[in-house]
Amino acid sequence: MEESVMKDVETGSEAGGEDVLVGNVNKLMVTPPGYPGAQRKGHLVFDACFESGNLGRVDYISEFEFDLFIRPDTCNPRFRVWFNFTVENVRETQRVIFNVVNFSKTKSLYRDGMSPVVKSTSRPKWQRIPAKNVYYYRCPDHRRNYVMSFAFCFDREDDVYQFAYCYPYTYSRLQHYLAGLERRNLPYLQREQLGLSVGGLWPYEACQRLCLDTRGE
Image (cartoon, rainbow, N blue to C red; front, side, top):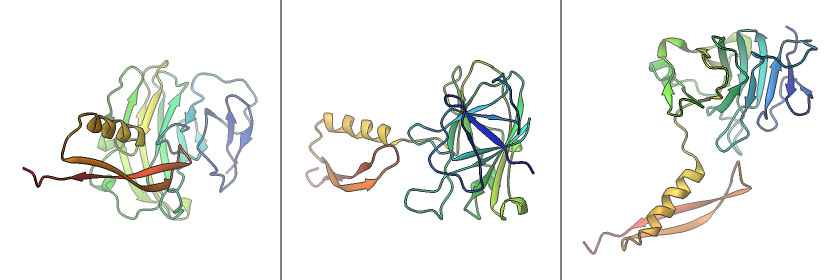
């Protein structure tokens, strides 16, 4: 099989190779192998350079199918589960199959009816992809890794679509929630920082705990 060609929308550079998973894809336009022309509608643009994003590589299989490689957990290369990425420059009624090809888990709730979530610019609420369009299986073509494939049809050309393993809950959202609790000055609540952990979006993220003291009640 020919190596897919991936072009950065801003730089036009190409990338490929079996183990190229250094950082998340950034506005990456995926075109057919050897395609010399300019970008057009239907040449999907992938991006995961945002908080909680994860997508390290995209391989073009056909006009309708793409292999997606997710990056491992921070400081633990054995675990590969989470994905969260956007797709734009779609064509109306364009049908695709996305294969997340390097899961590390042998068991998954995807086998029991769970499905990825999706939202778009014009529909900002997360919705689950119909379970009938989702398949989780072990694939001999990908080092016998577990693969999750799902089918999707884009219906609005100007929308940016976002796909995730499940409903994202970011570090920033957690910090906003905890700050709101602190502003209430609750007498039985104390917030403490235990230390710092290696983060994804920031070099270090605070490990915190909440202490609840109900002895006075």
